[in-house]
Image (cartoon, rainbow, N blue to C red; front, side, top):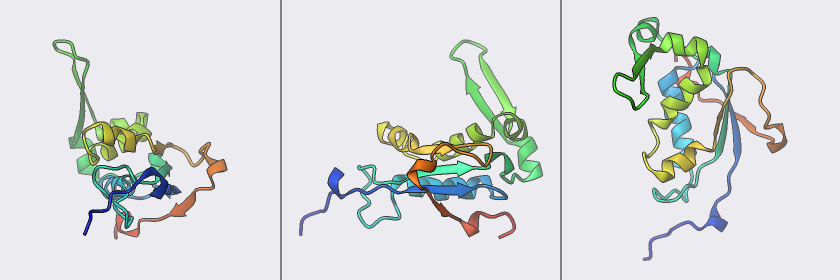
Length: 149
């Protein structure tokens, strides 16, 4: 039996919209990363991007544990000596909530060209509005990612 490898003509991409209000950051990121990779599809293959486009709205209303928000830090380096800067996740949630969600999802995707291609299908917005109305996104919910579930 020959191994099936999906072709571009076999791949159909849906547009999905997720409301992040009250969701836990890590649980939301794992679900979104799996959808971006296409692991929920029958034609999934690890070397082909078969995933869907995902729009995340209300990233500023994501739930963070109080202790984790104060202690967990996000680091970045400018590339120059002494150029390491860090911020707590609470500070990041106040200033750039969309970036915080994008970074979390990025860490769960492959760290190569394929992962960067998958990440380009992720659109994150801090508020409830987004400019992708013309794509008619289907609203989906991840109940296991809700805080208190």
